[in-house]
Image (cartoon, rainbow, N blue to C red; front, top):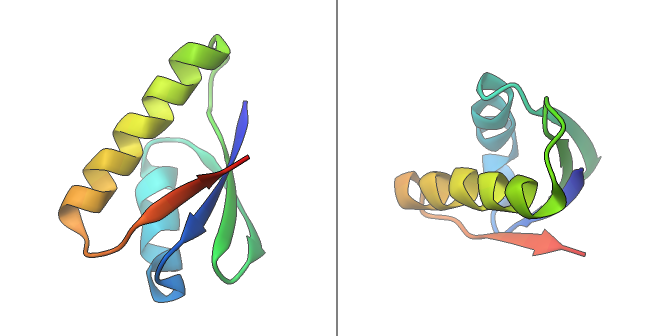
Amino acid sequence: MDVKLRLSDPGERDALRAFLEKRECQVEELAPDLLRIGLPHELHDQQAQMEVDLYLRVWESLHDSRIEVVS
């Protein structure tokens, strides 16, 4: 499952990328404020969405920026 993320602060892009890569996610930059991430393992869509949501909640609690999941 691939998910697109839009950052409220593009200056946080590299830090978010490193955070996700430490969790073995594949990260591709689509624009300065837009990333596409893929999970390292196959999950049902609902499980994958829950995992991504957890990562994003952790990130947002540690940083002063918002991340929007783009459909």
